[in-house]
Amino acid sequence: MRISKENKLEKIIIVGDRVLIKPKTASEQTKSGLYLPPGVQAKEKVQEGYIMKVGPGYPVSADFGFEEEAWGQEEEEVRYIPLQAKEGDLAIYLQRDAIEINYLGEKYFIVPQSAVLMLVREEDL
Image 1 (cartoon, rainbow, N blue to C red):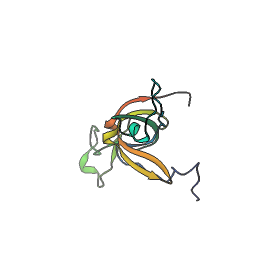
Image 2 (image 1 turned 30 degrees about the horizontal axis):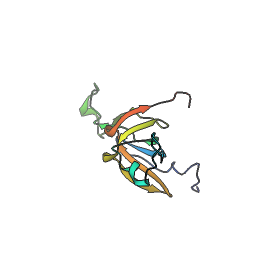
Image 3 (image 1 turned 90 degrees about the horizontal axis):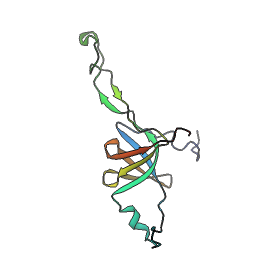
Image 4 (image 1 turned 180 degrees about the vertical axis):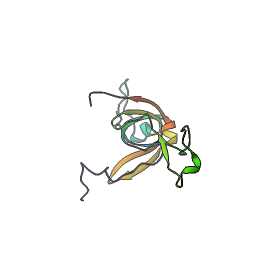
């Protein structure tokens, strides 16, 4: 399978309680009309971007909160508590907890859900 613009994120697997965020393009001009140099917006403490991929959630042991007999199971099955974030959400997140990556020439951030302050979800999408 060839990687194209449409399917380039299909091969990415986000682990645990993390999300992959594509940063929203920042305005170069402030509300008062001042033009900012390119690095100023990147240094803000709070950033926003769109969630592209979501990890499976918080891992918990198989017997966490379940009434099954523990001695009857041979293999440890991992279960997850799902994340609140969903693909397509606009996320407001703390920049200090984000890890910047460059994938196929585009900038993304991997952010733990604990660093996401707010989600904006449009149900119409």
